[in-house]
Length: 322
Image (cartoon, rainbow, N blue to C red; front, side, top):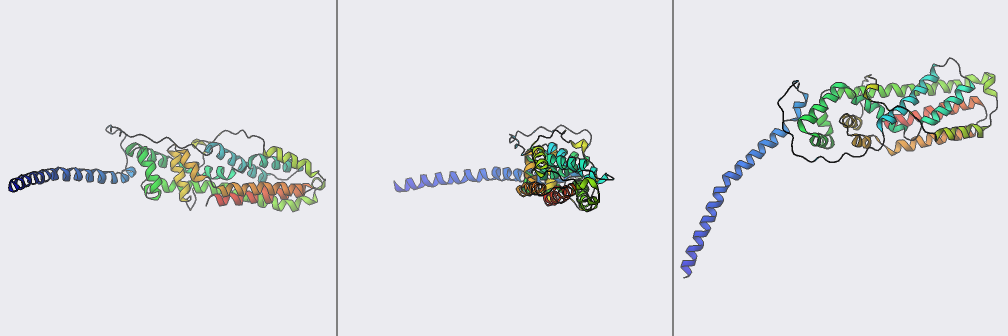
């Protein structure tokens, strides 16, 4: 009986081994096919740089479930418009042939309205939007999105942004344009600070600068302006200038530009936002108020405008771009 049972067990074990042996070629074939698919996916990246024909065979869309877009921390177009208006006020002041009490007080009120804590985010958004507006860069990103799918593009920009952007046509030039636009705008703020700093001494010889003004009255007007709403048309890609620099935008900002060009502003704003920038702008605003509270004459107001409204704010914004 024991021999009989042993023979039956041996027969069953042999059959099982034969079954496994029969399955192995099929499993190896499946693994080989999977390796080919993965190798093909890895080879898709360089295709972004290729010239895509005007018409190409339709590709069946992958059956994927897209993750919901992240909510933006702020409106990039509105923030950039606010920053551009602030820079515009700096350019206007430096173009004046002479200062007066009216245009000094007007500049204080205007900069109070525009220099909110979010101005640092607006400055970075301005450079990012200029980079994203570069046509070859935007077109290449859209091609990558069409070929690889939005989820794959977002994943690659998140996991290996530098490696992915090296395969995107126009990425380097877009980074240079964003940097150039920012450098030009920050230079305008620096010029305004220098011009007004010199003027604070030069205007002391003029009668209007020696007329005493109640500091509390001007301070109240400044505080009211700082909390008043600003109505500006949001900037779009067609509003952005194109001026290249010698050095590109920092990596995080050109990645933000890529996300913005793809309509992923939630991801773009998270790369732009820096708490330190907001804190710096808050200090600058506080210092303007303290300066005005200690001032009685218009030439002192010119100094407040130069030192804090422009010089200190510009320093905050320079730090934002690093």
